[in-house]
Image (cartoon, rainbow, N blue to C red; front, side, top):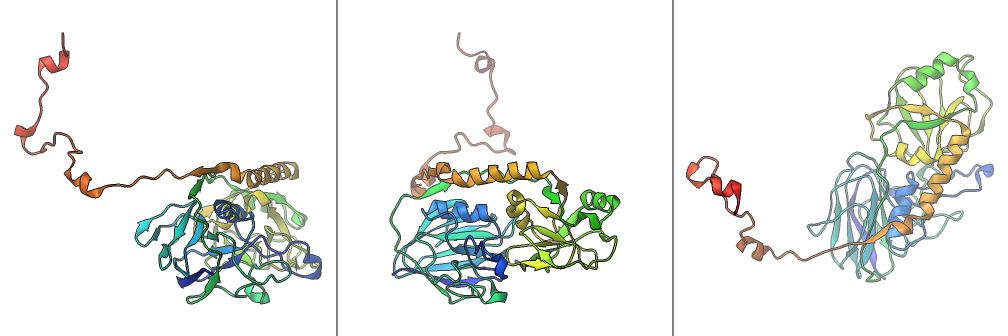
Length: 351
């Protein structure tokens, strides 16, 4: 069997899939990919189920080497430089590593997480129906922790299928949309206006459990403690220091801080990709609008296979290019003798 050996990888990288829905009533955190669209796009490129397990790669670079045979993979999510044995490869495409070849990924640019899907999926033993890693809970497979150099991912042999690319919608730079509640009555109208009118930045101390926000202090009306109740991905808690925390997939299933709002599901992946230190704003919408956006997002996921395209490639003969006069009649900017001055006949053209 082929395998993908991790030669190097940065922190905040782990195996993630669609998560463990349906067991929060028992205190089991859902986990799963932080950007579900990017995960689904990468899996679509190699013919996997949308939310099959893949490698979620954090902001830093990584290197993966194929061993025991060719391995077919696909990369989506945050843009970054990528090459196989020195050959540049593009984002949102599939690619095949020959036995012994290494895929090298650079630092993320303009985002935080990329997804490397492997044809046939990551091999592992599901825990509560999922391979998704939650290091705090000791959950996940094949390694219940962040990935590290020397780890090996067992894979199916490459199928030899033609490589594909996928056309995804352009990333929006619009404000992150929220729905107020369920404890927005713990904050004054002026405080909620401050929340919407302010620029926010994601703290470098954020992780898959929660994104800490840096910005103005959000004051409570009657203190920061409430009877603990359920949370969802995107819940925005306001702890005692007044600095919001947006709960992410590895969150607890309940919490005791007032929740002023929640990021809508359709925007959570876009929010998760905002790099630490970049300013952004929130925009409040109605529940009806949030439901409509969720339906659009689900339709996008459903139609991802329709967005696949063949990769048009050609072989470039460098030696022939060297011998070709591709520049036409070259001139020197500092040698007037090489300039071509149009004559009246040139301007008028033939009779």
